[in-house]
Length: 152
Length: 278
Ligand SMILES: Cc1cc2nc3c(=O)[nH]c(=O)nc-3n(C[C@H](O)[C@H](O)[C@H](O)COP(=O)(O)OP(=O)(O)OC[C@H]3O[C@@H](n4cnc5c(N)ncnc54)[C@H](O)[C@@H]3O)c2cc1C
Ligand code: FES
Ligand code: FES
Image (cartoon, rainbow over all chains, first blue to last red; front, side, top):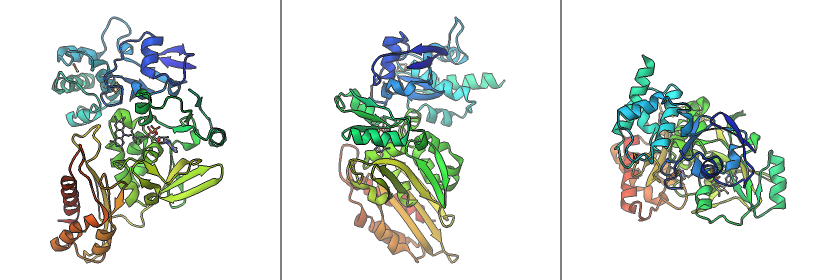
């Protein structure tokens, strides 16, 4: 089957029910996607499927056939960081980092779709991404900062 | 593992009759958890996700038909659902998280038949019907008859859910409520989940009252006794108190690791009180 991953066409020939997270990490070498719980609860494994955040631990790879996947590696294809990543650095919105790829992608889907800087709405959108380190304040700060910068 | 992936409803029915033990699979938000734990091993899977006809929301005479594969996210955002069935849109927005809403389907939510299914109270007060399909034909099941017990539906071995039919309300309700009470806003299984609609007479008496609760019995319940009692009455505080007292005619919550029966009852009564009170 063919899958578009980070803008590149990839082919995959293994079992249809391998989890998308495992295909990304093992077959495609994209180890930016992390596994937390493996049960859809924590959001660490979030990737974008046709632009929308989904838990890649709950997706059989055949559901990605012919569709567009974006992983955290897509945010900074060259050397330059994505504006959201820059804000994360400035606001210290990442500590241990295990949640960060998933948080970045869920937040990026919000920023890219033109989501508002309303903190409550951002928190609601991010509520499926658990972070045990930051207490979320700095994450929300970083998202708001990115949106405000883009508006100006 | 054998995986069948029909591209049409006809093909799905054919494959299902050839593989009667196959497990239907839609968004996988329930089943992948089981799969990851190794408890699906060996079972053939009938992956319905590529059946285009079952995705999306269509007009039908007197209402809307929601394809079984429609996701919670689509329902949450759909203008016709938000306008005509706002309690369902609110329920879908309360399922899991954005990630779960983007994948979980309405058909899967119903077929899973959890006592805590968050869309059920809304579907119960809207008097939805579940359209099933099998090689023997179709059935149209009133929503409250869909469930036989915890994790048990009225589906027989050969049936799949094709769509959920939502009849338009005869008139705009005077008030409506959806409330989910869980430990936190996201990813929490409901301790109680409620949906209510009320229509009033010109003089303020209750013309019609519909109220349903989830997580309060093995299956979703309409409060038949309280609904009948309030019909024709003015919602005075004593009438509301009597109605709240009638809750236990229709629901009987349990103590479990998530909450206690007493808490669930009191919170549910409070939702009813604040819905009807001024
Ligand atoms: C982290 C997490 C949080 C969750 N939070 C909530 C929540 O807050 N509220 C809530 O209500 N649910 C919640 N769920 C449960 C689940 O997401 C929903 O029930 C969802 O709607 C299931 O749909 P699905 O398409 O993913 O089902 P699947 O996993 O594909 O299937 C579920 C069941 O339905 C059967 N089935 C699927 N489609 C059909 C069909 N068309 N015909 C017949 N049988 C069918 C399957 O055989 C299976 O038994 C959560 C799940 C997770 C993992
Ligand atoms: S690893 Fe997928 S949601 Fe936790
Ligand atoms: S930075 Fe450690 S879990 Fe979020």
